[in-house]
View 1 (spheres, helix red, strand yellow):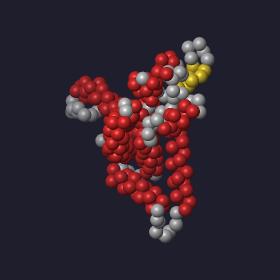
View 2: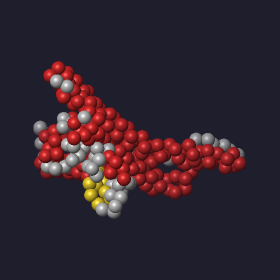
View 3: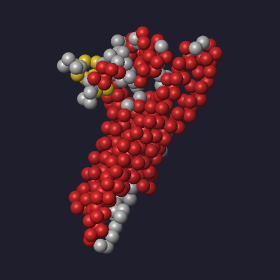
View 4: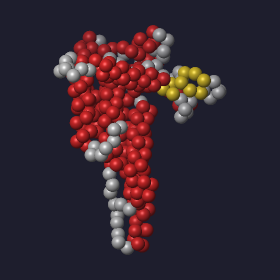
Length: 286
């Protein structure tokens, strides 16, 4: 870490800074050495740590579940296979109870999002200094290990769900049906003149409702995990205040970690359920 990281403010800033790669104002490409340089790189800068950990955890999910699929038998599963089967059944039950249409994509998508988000959230339970210190020894200045504390990751997933929602809205209802859904409700009238007058009002209300779906989906996940990470960072500061504060920090950290397990699971579940609900709405005719 830099000398700034020795102060409380510097420590917090360091742990909240992503490893950013992009174009410097002078035209050269490279890593940002601080938040100011990261801002100067603009929209097209890439958070390498977010990309690495999200791809790594996604690959881990695929490898683990493929290994379970290869070992699956007709006999009663046990241990690892039993756990994987329980996860699949849990997701399948939620899809069956929420999604009432025929679409073979929804269940695999729900399973992928649930396990992937859960793995990314679980990285928040790793002590905040372990991996950044290892990265520092390897010459890497910044390393955020929880992808869901980066709004780029949560917005990326929510926009993917949003694109699928729009695709199925148009595929199932047609362009005319989707346009009518945006302009002919919630206010309705028998008079043609009133129908025309209600179109801009209905479109504004429905458009706001439509756009709020990916925004709320991403910000809910980001806000909860970012707040949890911030609390872990603040607790970690207690360990530098002497023996008494270190003991207090150890107890508080354990208590918060136990409580945070609920948040980790709940946010993954909510992201999955809302995805299923949005796709159900996209397939439903009003």
